Length: 398
Image (cartoon, rainbow, N blue to C red; front, side, top):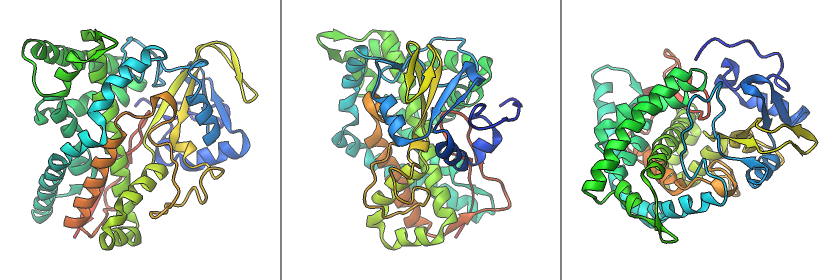
């Protein structure tokens, strides 16, 4: 991430790549929400930032005025790469989404739980081996970042050993590529070349995997072409991996810093699914973008055609008008209609998978390593850009 001009104020010059925002965005959102709930910046060619739950919801449910053709705010857009259904608008959106749904039903996800649980224990074994050898342990690098990438690879029929390659592409596209067009082009080019080969192989020899399913799927009597399948594979890789490992990493970060919550979940493991929902609310990883279709006005804010809107589900989930004690993490919160998986027509198709992965990962971690804390001798670092989560999460375990 390149050096950036300092923010003049958060109401008219916000920058979601600012170090202050990356480290701790919550006070910034509170400040904006209290004074000017929809902020604006001329950076990134003009971007709006709604911070209230209702505003975020209203925009998400209005695809007629706000398009999803660009879902990431960048300095430049050197390539046009679709990732249906998330970059699709009605009416094209429905076909792309409906075809994906069967692969992510609760029943389909249940079939992946055994592999996920086994994977978590493999990773925990390695963490304990590193600890026994006196090597540093990292909750993000050694654990959270492996789980969704390897499960998605498993679903696509790809080698789980390709995880390092996938993580590199995610970094190039979602982090470095936000303000470095060369990184973005490199990431998309390498990903596209890899997936085109996979599609050609599945065309020649179909298998029992998600790529073969997409190539064979029909909607209204029509099959999808290779470009559509390629875009969906991009979506599954980028949107289905970084988001989940960020949410999981933030959950582990919280438990490492809050002994009472961690020990309560160890003693009451049946509470873990409820706690996961609260971690999703309090540390929502995903901010998506929309594009203003035509000059319009929203809640008194004039918006120009082609300006972007940062649809901050994390800020919406900290709105005290929607959530009592919004800035407190309450692991047994009873009512929790959070927006961590989005709102409207683009609500996350993979929410069942993400919930399962996060729940199983926390269950197995607390079962095997009930005591762990942040290692204050090494820095915890957070990602920049569209998805927020710990990239380095040093732990002291045992």
